[in-house]
Image 1 (cartoon, rainbow, N blue to C red):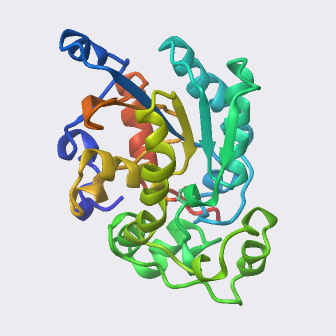
Image 2 (cartoon, rainbow, N blue to C red):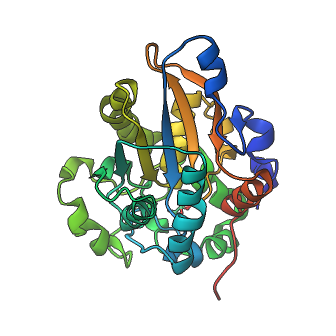
Length: 289
Ligand SMILES: O=C(O)[C@@H](CO)OP(=O)(O)O
């Protein structure tokens, strides 16, 4: 874990608009007679490659057994306890997000819910880091370089090359067949990822939220950071300290007339558990050697 990136201090100190524990935003809105609607974003459960601590990006890793359990015990339980209801759900085209969504919907008896899977919500493409262990890369290139690739707003990992063992499986993934060749990335920073995620969010998802539909998004760490940056207007500098853990729902509430956010961005988890999971996500982790 690199101190120079402020990760130890975490979002608690540098990103104060995030609240914890339970959904409580409607109180002020009610007082003001404001019509509001909520949006929920969840990062998929632990994947097989999260477990192995490998840079994953567009590699299509399955959920791990633990990830599938967390989709039930962390995601679905929190949504049920907060009495959140949905009219439609979005996921990326990646299997770890689609599996998480289908487990959550099954658990909530929402198997008939309208579901859209779209590549615009895919994790950032990790370029030629794809498939490498994060600790091994830190040993080779230094922690500062690895944290910079992972969390800096405008730092691109080296582009993937045809000799990367995952190049062909990513290029030929049938789930990506509709991606225009000119838009198929070879690497992405958070800044570059935002150029595909934010227009999709604004033009497709947010319109529905303002129209009153209750939307659930199952996405990825960098996609969630992109949406938090956009919605909460986090600076390019401070976004490097924001880490979004697997499976914990993140709730936003909006004024339906103005589109402005109401109240705090809220993670539905006990504060200690949330902090522990944030630290785990921020950490470079261990080698598998
Ligand atoms: O490997 C990845 O694709 C991402 C998310 O799992 O990792 P990181 O947290 O290092 O950005």
